[in-house]
Image 1 (cartoon, helix red, strand yellow):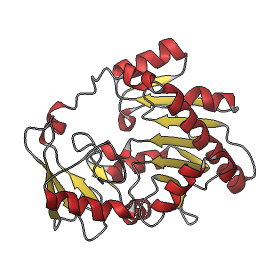
Image 2 (image 1 turned 45 degrees about the horizontal axis):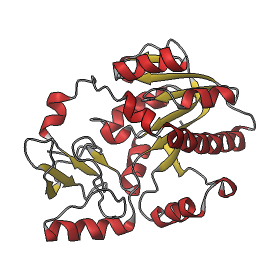
Image 3 (image 1 turned 180 degrees about the horizontal axis):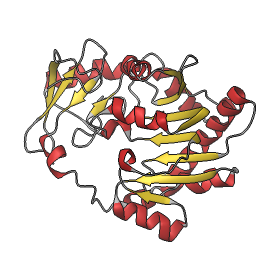
Image 4 (image 1 turned 120 degrees about the vertical axis):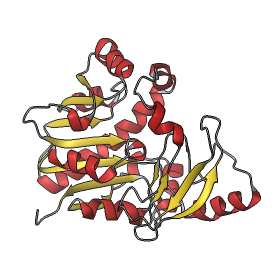
Length: 277
């Protein structure tokens, strides 16, 4: 086992998590070199065939998902306009599921396209929402010579077996001045302490982001610290910042949650090409 981020072979096994869907307890490795957590569920590589019928999963909470995506897209528009003095023209959602973000981008004047490896999700988005979703893996997708002003990648990177290669692929799709949004599960400083206690007590409560750093060990094979996300960005020669908050549009609870996570990983990152790239 080695770190998925920096390939360091000198990682330390800090936990083994028993889950209902894994054949054996999932080893969790921590890399002192970059601060990244790599998880190794045996069933993940064997069974990940991108045939999950998750349409109802996304429809069940579609209202909340659209509201969250709307807030992020508005913040992306503001950040892009501040950096470039104009509005973005096009939008790519990498790992778009049924494509809830795509009509939101189009309503704000951007041509939008989504890429989704799950066939049923892509089909539903095309047929029921009328959006442009390409089915397949991003690294093997032929998008022609298109480059995108905004790339939206929400809750994808924690599932990716080779994060540096995936980020390089996204970088290659960015237009000059383009910006890339990466959303991953947040990690609060409190998580580090409570996760340690959970391990010592031999119990692992679920359902609260404040109690357990490893949300879904069956599927989330990466857990990013702020330091490891910075390492990933710099390794791909990209600048990294926290996606700026629009305080006027956020509820106090969300603002507090963001502030609590600033010392570790708030889960919302904005990447752009390095100025000397």
